[in-house]
Length: 209
Ligand code: GAR
Image (tube, rainbow, N blue to C red):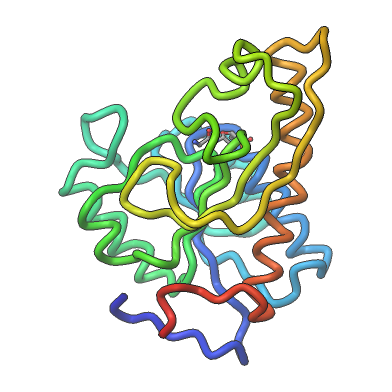
């Protein structure tokens, strides 16, 4: 929680972490540009893959967007990598971190630095279907509805306090692709709704005491 000051007189500065396409990131940047998120500013986009498409999208909006080495493990940042990521985010001045399709679990160094001010978006109605391939799992389970969740990140996987959800129906002819696309549209609305609530002080940030 070091270096964390946000007075609400200033815009809330965010760092967005991505792994690929970056459509949630793009939706947030568009809302900022259009003035719909007037109390939010994006200070930095970081990706754990050099070929993440979202990096180009962010750069074309004039946002500093960088690949940072995640280390040799596939599912998490190594401790040495986490230290670099923490240092880079601190240097950006971001007060809030938004995971947007960031496909690694955050561990000790990262959580010690930023606990209580990391958001995640997940394509299921948590606590149902944490983890991976969740749209396929919702179809296989015969669910009548699916959706997306924005939540605070804690030290578990997709387990932190829920801030908002949007639901979609599951149709009889749905495939993993059609359902994912229907959920994604709602993700693009939900993330900005929650960010707006935080930026105007309606949703408290746990790291601010
Ligand atoms: C989104 O559906 C997001 O919810 C999901 O990855 C996709 C990223 O799309 N995230 C997770 O599954 C994290 N557990 P995007 O790169 O176009 O935003």
